[in-house]
Length: 637
Ligand SMILES: Cc1cc2nc3c(=O)[nH]c(=O)nc-3n(C[C@H](O)[C@H](O)[C@H](O)COP(=O)(O)OP(=O)(O)OC[C@H]3O[C@@H](n4cnc5c(N)ncnc54)[C@H](O)[C@@H]3O)c2cc1C
Image (cartoon, rainbow, N blue to C red; front, side, top):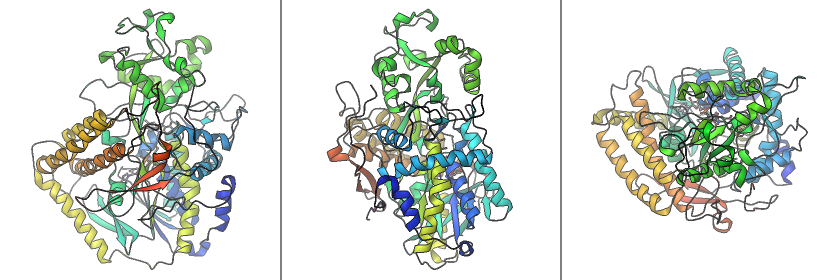
């Protein structure tokens, strides 16, 4: 396998523009001759499917929910970044680019990130034109707030429901194409494999989640927009359905998987309250605009927060990172929270929490102003914890939230499997080792509305490939493999539920490969995961059968993939003997406990190549060349 990032030549600022001019085009009358499959209808997939159909391609779009409107993107709360500089506070495309590169701890590809920053400004215009109700200032201009890792306010938002409002915009555009007959939508349909014909991705095999029917779909290109894999940790802020199946099966068909160990732990989530939980809840980073994070200075201080005077509080983010304060990036804020809790200064049950306190902002701005900004988040917090965040500080703790790793893609967003494009959270492209807040929505929509509509046309126009159909033997073969696997899961009839395996895997991952990792723990995990996987295949109990709606079977298939993927993640974490961003190896830290990179040895993207069943994957390296920025020790002090 050869990794060719296909970064266009020329100055960074002009690469995308020049490349677009150089790209080959498909004549409008010829576009309808090309079939495109888009798997996923979240912000990345929904925007891509709508845009490709609008261009004239024949699009089929798939999702496992009953409606594209239920994609996990709907959960996004805080906002979306764009370098509009509406606040006149010094923002620019270059600054957004630089913040993102630095935020990712110098482990992202410069050219992709610069393009992302350029395109960011178009996204807001597109969404406003669709009617997305972004918050506005009194005079009618769009409002902004701040997010972590930036000293400017560039985040556009719709209260605490930005993802939902953006998704409604993309969904309307998609529905329009469905209505026009240019896009066929397949809800409640799960992709279970990619079909490769003559070394190219030429289709997918799916299962109808209502009837259990296994079917094949052929196309000239396949786009995966299937989201992130945070649920390998079982407990995360992701929707329960989020999984790695599509990208992992693509990995087994030749699409290299990049940086699986780069996982984002978000500092502001509602703390775990017991074993009964099956997911965790995010309290948006936007809350750190007005909330101050603190713990008592004294260890084991069990006084209620109202009885702890200011002088006995440690506003540790403001103390440690005075220039960014409570808006230090997520990896840094998470580690700082872990540190104070490990010292015995955490609050709430088990001491696994820190306060997020709005008292000062309420005093300064009034409760009404805080309500206007975040009311649905306060309401959500109260429903879950029974506590009123306006009256008493919220309690928060870090939790798994986002995955920067994903399918390796080149500048065109095409994987190492020709014809297979991967967009949104499912690819690895723009966030390096840590993602800054409000940049996932930006990336998903940049990929879907602006990048893939260009690059897929170039692919079609440059490659002369013959049409294929589902009667090709590769489709039959792949269908048979899918059926055999499902049958195997159904035939075990063991003693443990799918959930119990998932929970055990997640705990293992969190303990050994969570917020802090070390060689010993990772080596142990690499022993324990195969043993757990073996037990899974011998002792899992999948209820029901394959010819019906069967959520136990759906879950089993996803957990089976997590069982293999977890090993890849830990192997990647073990191999990367440095700390960077969200990947914190305890052995590699500065004197004051910050991540210590080793650019000489690890200034590359790890892209893992599948070598076949039972064989260790092969590490391929894409060297990261920084022509524009200087790699420095990241500092937010
Ligand atoms: C609670 C929360 C809040 C967030 N807030 C923000 C925020 O404020 N700002 C920000 O920038 N980011 C935020 N994020 C991150 C952001 O929401 C996600 O990264 C982003 O929405 C992912 O979009 P996506 O389109 O790539 O994937 P998703 O929205 O996860 O969509 C995946 C799609 O793929 C489909 N799919 C998956 N597998 C299959 C399969 N095998 N077969 C068929 N279909 C499949 C699903 O049905 C779905 O349609 C937040 C994340 C969480 C968890």
